[in-house]
Image (cartoon, rainbow, N blue to C red):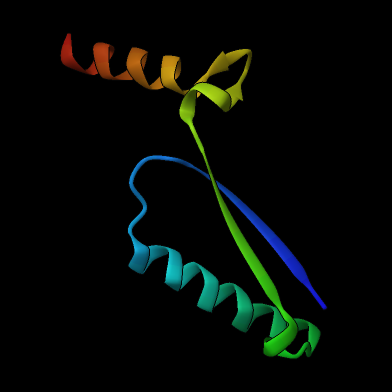
Length: 73
């Protein structure tokens, strides 16, 4: 009974994109591990960018800085 937990930042992934992730991940688990798709669980968790940190800073801060630097060029 495989359980796959996918975490993405909450930035507007569409229902269609999430469905494609679920479908594709299930197919991968079935093809690689020969598991039953009916008992393969895929969970997508969306995390606010304020709650996701990289290199000591939140993704919100990093993206804001990148946006501001791009606008000043």
